[in-house]
Image (cartoon, rainbow, N blue to C red; front, top):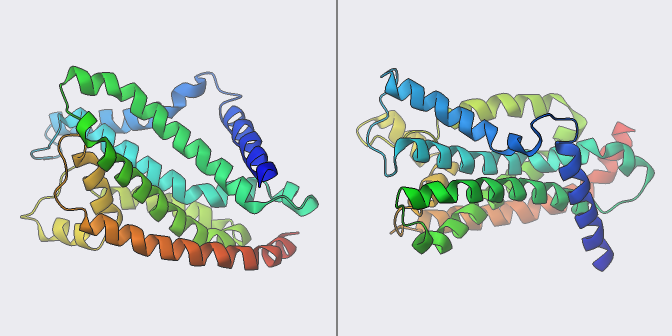
Length: 254
């Protein structure tokens, strides 16, 4: 167990360094994507191309936090597939613990999220946003998003490792999925499509709950608890299936 932890830590440090090694901007790339998305939608809102409506936070913060939470979910979901895929050559030659590789990838995702959160904290304080009182609920929302993302990612892993098309398809799907999730806009209760998208999209309540926790204590945690419980079951089943199928997947690839 200790060796597995040491391996996970070593892989985490290696991946983090490799991620930004040949980059001029380096670790600034952690903050650039959500900032660029926020600026894009803020510009469209100011130009009245989009009618965003009333938001619980100043709109730049609303969009940035939503984008930050969405990235946490999407990066968590794609992380297992990307981590195992990029280490396939090593795994064919050496019998490394698959869990350590997956956990190292998740560590990088969580590190990126924490850096973004730290960087916006002064802005939250400057705008007098009472986010400190909602920290327990923010943590609950973040953990729920990661569990859901990991559950979906683990389920997709075997087929994603066999067919590279899956990773490309998921990148396309995630771009569209962001637009039907209240990431950069609030739910419009008068729009039936918006309401349906919220009801049947498990990510939507988690993002809304997490973002609302920055301004107040959410009153309804039941959907979050239900989604997280189901995600945990899917995650456990998916992890067991991955362990059983991984040797067959590796033999097919090699």
